Length: 388
Image (cartoon, rainbow, N blue to C red):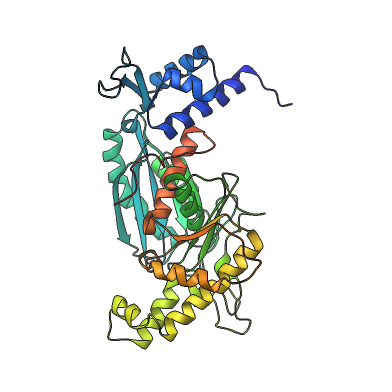
């Protein structure tokens, strides 16, 4: 039996209450006591702490919502204006940035072209870009200002948040965390972009405890949520599924192997094949022309081969595919699932992402908020927070 002192129990109760306030958007103290099973005195004491810290606000429930219920109850909700977080996705040619308040609402987002090849210079560019915005938003979001930041990297990041290798830029053995924390005076988290993407899918779309997300943009990455935690493997290298070999004597990959899956089934590989076959057509026109052609056929065939391997190895409940092309082509999903004919395949659903290209930055910003609150899970699925 696990035991703990009063301080531990108080911290545990704090986690439970904050998770429920976030999940339910707004609720009364009596609702909190009923849902959590904590007594009213414990709930009241904790809520008073939240109010003093200004992370929670309270107001009377609207008259229309409380009609025929007598006295209007006081409703609690997270104070979105108390602070904010930042999610950053550093890709081969640009970085994407998203600002999110404590209620999971995006209030600013943009893309910036990367001007350098060296990650030290890229980090300096990021600092120069964000510093005036952080100064601006720290004035607007009081009393906390910036509560944390997450950086998504398209490559291998270890459990110490060090960048081990990025196949596209060939960045290796780099620690940018301390430089960013010093510059912004906040907690900074460095992670693989696929990990942050699957985290976003769980936080904003479907809060299930086990979820897979495969990102297909410039390469292929696999993010895994298992029992409500990001699965990282022995040293943090889990999810580099794009470098699963599907052709033993195939194309040379920057990772050192030949025939890696992402050379055949990433959207970058598809775009290159379409442009080579139809150089005068737009991507949309080329896809339409190739709907029943060899390029699309081969791409979906390779995509299905990799998915078949993943399903047989992991037996996932749900797989979300996230790519600029596949998100807008639902017939591709039908085609892919039709190719998964093995009697060993067992999964509930394969579908396209609803978050799209913003999944990494959404997940990064939400991850920083989760860590700021010190909670185990964060659930924004009841909010209308999906980027339109």
